Length: 101
Image (cartoon, rainbow, N blue to C red; front, side):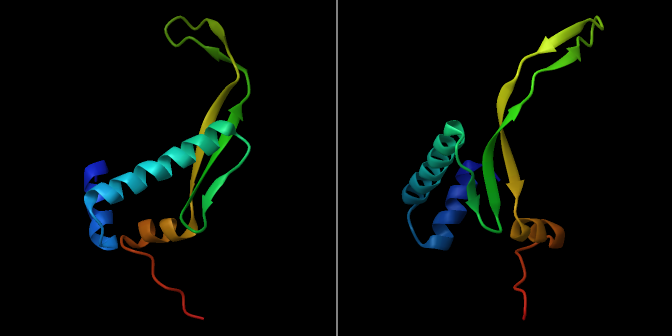
């Protein structure tokens, strides 16, 4: 599924236009990108997904062609974690089942 397929599916489920669904999807990712870039907070949709900035420490590596030792500087990255509902959907091959109590 690509972005346009996702937007069409969102629009159909929400009963809105593709333009409105696309604007909402773009806005969500803009907000997530801003929060991750700031690095001071984790963005979490409980049960579904979370995004946060991580810092990779500087380390020694090797040039695979020459075997020469190289210094790899510290860098920032994003960590994306799947929540329990997303994991359950992937495991079952369909939407998450409701838990009975």
